[in-house]
Length: 104
Image: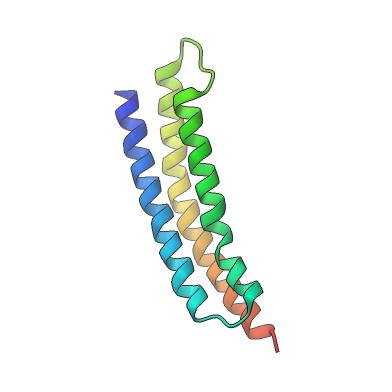
């Protein structure tokens, strides 16, 4: 049960990460400054690292006899990661647009 919950949460977090990748790509197409383009890719990169870290922790982390509790907690963290990724990408896109407008 705990593994199914973890895989489901990881799947939805992967979908959110994929949406942030698409959002970053669409935003970076319309920007002219390379610094602003790099700002667009901060959230997808950090989201990928966070997702892989959580997935590794869920399956291989030291939990002793509390494996099902640990997997449930990591699943909850995946669900928390989803809105953070999406809102973070919206903020990063707005910041990138603002940086692009400020450059001469």
